[in-house]
Length: 324
Image (cartoon, rainbow, N blue to C red):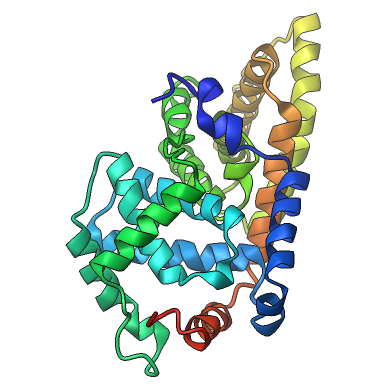
């Protein structure tokens, strides 16, 4: 295993710019134009949400831990950067990604158990037109080799969880803030961010958002996260101003509990801003991550599970991918 992210295959071969990612996907669609025209699919974010839900359902049946689920989600994204989705049975690919991820994360599942749980989980999803999902050990084994080949045997995935765990005590995150940061990290796997930014940038963005967001705010998540973007943009300037002069902070004994809580939160964000500046962290990358998450949460509000499922099942059935 690579000693760290900077020496890993993840950084060298699986971190792209947005332009590179868009070009790869465009080439895939151009190579399968007839399929693309015949079987329109929902936008990528809606597909990612659906895949995440199906992966979570299968993982729950198997008792798989979160890190293995996260690795499986990264495998899906890498695989579908190389293979047009309409050429595959996504249910078989999801089961294979989870099976392979469990191996790599040292919590292996027996192939017979994975096949058994997948067969019992997805016939209902595919609908009455399909009596059973033709998913057997040999097909999953073949798909595993196909997936490994398309990923060039680059199977080690560095996750944001380690950075998140190591820093949450340094910045005195409350339990609610730590849980929110973890939730944001989990959500980012439904975006393109795992293919765009290093895991530590994702973790740092999640920590900042957890500090800024108000869990009980009546505003929508997107509005709250827009405020977080502004806070991040100001962070560097505030830290530089503090470095240039003294910053005294006094406790006003007449302040209310609510005001003291707000002051504590503000001080926490200011300390975090100093850390970001002194660490030479990619602030622009964090801003972009925040914007991507804003866009994702807005998109999530328009997600329709029924329509997404029907469009996926249509090409699976029409092309006989559930039986072939």
